[in-house]
Image (tube, rainbow over all chains, first blue to last red):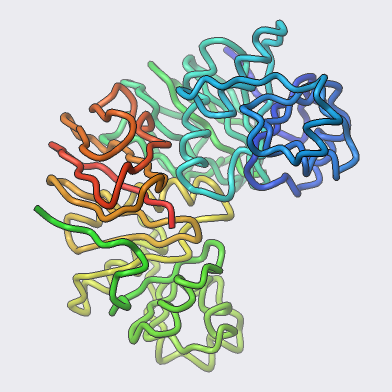
Length: 211
Length: 211
């Protein structure tokens, strides 16, 4: 069974996409952003990332949100994508795949407009088909799974499970029972009993553990 | 067909539930909070609402998040609910129904933990069975519908539509076509063409217009 560590015990990610939601403020998020060797910024995020004191490996988007002086100075880093059918996060994801990167951590993808937040989170269910993905926010870690998986946890850790099309769903080690439910959002606000829990699933779910 | 005004043109709501997410900061949200005659606070939200200079009509929750001096001083306003199966927002919603209130505006329900944000937004699809509901955030207005509806808009207004179980879905007056889609999140990031658009639906959807 696939095992997922506690967020704090994950190695520094080797590839991060920084999206243009709220800039991360948790200490874990800032450590990852500082230490990661390869950060791809969606174009609206690059201004804040540069102010954070770091240089992105690439800037992906349609270039609309870049300050003129940044556009000029970092032109060699910009990968322009004018295709309108996907959002900036998906463009950055596709760029990472084109660079052979198959383990991708998404950050800065929540906060601000709620429809962006919902859209970005739900895209994890698509991205998992092509890479190992996770999303770190200031409040927790989202991981999409489509097979039985073990998650490290701690007693009373808050856990939410979102059904992204699973037809079977159950858990060991959570306070409230899970089922495939009628509605995708009915697995929120659960809680870990001990130091690990198991999700049994047929289909896709998103697992969120509060950090 | 039911018609929905632009957020700015809605009359001051007569019943607001203030949840414990980010305290509203848009000028529209603050105007509604200031002028509304009947604001029910989820218990974590009452501290900030009092600091905002207003007195809630009621405080609903398990009382855990109240500062001791507030608990003592406003004991007459507190409706304690220890039932664990629903979240504070649902407790406040049920309380409003018990008071005969059938037109309810939810605020402060997003920001902070993303699983709360997703859960609270999705609950609109349940609440609509029992009341006229809407959710105002700092970025836009969510409205759940289950019948063909007309929305006032303006050219280029950003619009997202979330499928909450609809089997048929289409729109007039949006830039990109809608369909029932395979996945609930595939109707995000659309755009109004002019001053109104129509959603045709069989089943439930959430409509989000950016303010």
